[in-house]
Structures are given as structure tokens and as C-alpha cells.
Amino acid sequence: FLFSIIISFTTTKLSITMGKKSKRKQTSSTSSTHKASVKKDDKPTILDETPDNLRFEDPFEDEFEQEDMVMDGEEGDDDIENNLKEESELNGNAKVQSWNPLTSSLDPGMKLEVDESAYKMHHSLTPEWPALSFDILRDNLGESRTRFPHSMLVAVGTQADRPDRNKLTIMKLSDLCRTGGKQKTEKEIEDEILGEEYNNDDASDDDEEGQDEDDIEEQIDVDPILEHFSLKHMGGVNRVRAMPQNSEVVATWSDTGAVNVYNIRSILDNFNRSAGMDGLSSRTRKMAKDPFFVYKGHSTEGYAMDWSPVTEGQLATGDCDGNIHVWSPSQSFSKYCNSSFVVNRAYSPNGEGNIDNPSVEDIQWSPTEGTVLAAAECGGYVKIYDTRCAGRAMLSNKIHENNADVNVISWNPIISNLMATGGDDGLFSVWDLRNFQTKDVPPQPLARFTCHKKPITSMEWHPSDESMIAVSDEDGTYIYDLSIEEDDVEGENVELDGVIPPQLLFVHCGSESTKEVHWHPQITSMVMTTALSGYSVFVPSNL
Image 1: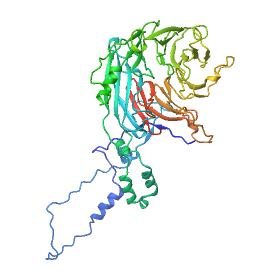
Image 2 (image 1 turned 90 degrees about the horizontal axis):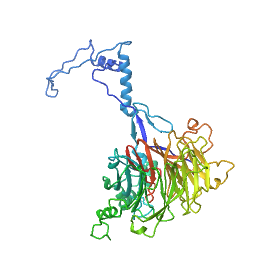
Image 3 (image 1 turned 30 degrees about the horizontal axis):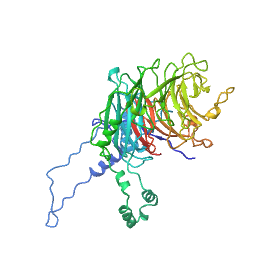
Image 4 (image 1 turned 90 degrees about the vertical axis):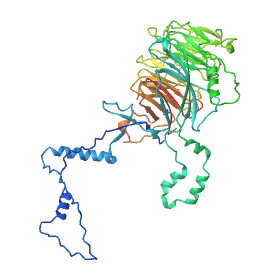
């Protein structure tokens, strides 16, 4: 298969213009020109002035300023070489190289510049406080959207300098237009190949008159609009997750050890009202500023949290002491009150894992089974639990022999027997869960990528493409297509063998310390990331 890797940043060398005092050798062509224009032996011929031959007298004489001559071996040689190099760079011959965090390091003095042609859409936002986690909220604007401009809803949690300054912010980003330039039509590409002599003006006029309204609207360039409401949150937000069946319910993991559940229905109504959507009453709903359910049953803070995509209202949370609590909706769940959930302390550390450091780093519910969940733990362990069997794991395997922590896991929503894991050692692996049942022999991954230099911080499968996955480390965000197979071609890209895998389709970098990445569940191939430097929302040009 033919594949392309699009790197979204390039490095360029700065060029310096030549100063006025630079010394330059006088070339032979210049000398010959002066000799041809002035000859010592020739005398000018003076013609008599007649009505047919009028004499023109110029009151201003031409003045010629001769440049200083620099002899060979003097200090001017270095200046000439530098000037020629600078002129070459000014003429468009500056060396431009693509930069890849998997193969290159950012040396002091190097400057990254974004290549906007690598994106169909690319927008960035710098908030007041950085966010460690966020989640994209589902809306009622339709599925598989591709038409620009786009609109999206996001819930983000801050990491402020003081616990009382943190917030849960609900944002609406609208008018997200195409930024990579107008996409060429098939006829424009054909005209470039065939040339001007094959162009048909009449056909071109007909095509322009019959241009689709959708294409015209996609060319509209407007500034993005940001609307947001913030709710007070005690402590930094370690994780944010919205219920997939009902986006108005958002849960947060606080670094104070509490799990908070918010009802953001009034905020979403305000967004809809500002957009002029019909069907809303004129009465303004009172905004609930505090969480309707707060749980403080964990012994310490945690990062693992996930809503079940099968059972509405079912939540799992894991803390840094290795405990996993399973939440079930009560009869009063629809009322959104302090009795909406029943929390069960389902699992605690035992002799089957890392007793010294049993922290649960990530949790994922099965996309098809309402009672099955997986947990990524420190020490290189991945465990599979069934809520019908309390107190122990159904499967427990150590997938990292070097005891590296498993930071993140992602369960394929389409092929339920596939799971991806990312480790603290930079390993990114894909597993077939049917092979997890063997205890005597350690399970072998279907694919393992060793090209990442930094710990894997987040990963997520594409919501509609079973072979595509987004992975992030501290240097950037990477999109892989695991359906691509490597061609056995001798002597081709030997220096990149084992460094840049053929499955790598796209690299987005430039953010400082990327922490989390998510696909938009309703907008085709839209990706959002959060980092220490802010948020990025983009659509790659090759997806």
C-alpha cells in the first residue's frame, strides 16, 4: 500500500540581508562594461545643429560612483561568500526540512513553523489555566458531519495554582471554518495535468454556474466564536467524563479525593437559546452551580474514570491505592439528587498484581458487555473484571516485563476483542483479548510500536473506523492506520526502518506536554487535544 506521512511543522533558517557597508568584488562583466563605454582614443563627433537634427543639452551630468576594489586574500572573501549565500536564500532557495519528534530533537535555536496545508481545519486556544483532561459532549446536530463550519461542545477541568481557583468549564466552539485553503475540484486537477490548450471555456463557465451551494459555504472565512460557562470546582481536575447517553451529566475526579457529578442542562439550554434554536421555552432555567452528587468514599485521589456505553448511569472510578468502585444508578437517578447513585467498593489490591504500587491508572468499560471492564495498573498489569464476580479479576496479565506502568488503555468500540495499551516506557501495543486467557505463556500483542521516546499519555480508537487510532505523548499527537501493511522493498527508507512505522499517517506537534486526545464522535476525523500550552482542534488533510 502507498501511504503518506504528513508532518505539520517545518524548520527554516533565518536569512539576513546584506548591509550597505558590505564589500563586494568587481566582476569582469562590470569592468568590461565600463571599458566599452569610455575609450581614451575615441573622440566624440560633433554634428552641426539643423532643423532636422536638433542638439539636446542635458543640464545634469551623470555621476558614477565606483565601488571599492577588494583584492584576493583580503578580508572581503568571507563577506562575498556570506553575501552569495544570503542572496540564494532570499531568492527562495532556503533549506526547509520537515520535523518529526520520533526521529528528531528540537535543538537550541531551531524554530518550528506550522504548515497549514497539512490540515483541512486547525484552530488553537490558550486558556487562563491549563487542563489535564477534557471530554467532548454529544449534540443534536447530526452524525458523521463533514460540512464546514463546524460546531462542538466541550467540558474541560482546570489545573489552577490554588485549589479554590479551579473550575469546570463548558465551552461551545462554533464557526470552525476550513483553514487549509480551498480544496481543488476534480476538474481543476484535470486542467493542471492536461494544460491550458485542453481547457474549454464554455464548460468552465457552465461548471461555475452549477457550483454547489455547499462548496460556496465552505469557502466562507469567518472568525471562530467561543461561548463558555464556568462552575466552581474545589481542587484540580484530574479527569472529566460526560455520560455518552446523556451529555448533560458530567463527572469529575478531583485531586482532593472526591468524585463530583454535575448537571449542566441549564448551560446547554443557554447555548441553544443563543443559537436561536426553536422548541425552547422563553423561561430561563436556573443554573445549577454545585454538583448534585459528591462521593468521598475513595481513600485517595485518582485518575481512572469511565461511563459505561451499554448501561446508562453506570460509572467506574479507580484511585491511586488500587481500589475500583462501581457506581449504579438508583431509582431516583433521573431527579439528579444526592441519592442518584449507589456506589459499591467492588475491587481492592490483592496478591495477583503489583502490591507495592497498585495504582489504577485508567479504566475502560466493554463496548458490548454491560458488566465487563478493564483496568490499567502500575507495574505493567492489565486486568479484566466482571461486576458479577466481586472481589477478584477474571483475567490478569503482566504485559510489560520491565515493570513499566500501563498509563492508558482504549477498547475498540467496533471490534470488541481488540484493546490498545500505552506504557510509561513509550510502548504502544494492540492486543487480542482472546489471547489473554493463557496463564502459562505471556500474551503476545498483535502489534507493538517502539518509536515513541516519551511516555504515552492518551489514546483513543476512531469512533467509526476500526483500524484507526489516535495516540499522544508529551511531544505530540499521532494518528495510526493499523490496516496498512509494510511492503518488503529492499534499499528503500532503510535509515527510517523501525523508527517511523508505515502505519503512521499524521503527526500534530508544537504543543507543550500533550496530556489527552479525543476524536469527535459526530464530526468525521476531527481531533481535539489538551496540553500545557492550551487546546488544539484540527482535521488532518489526509483523512
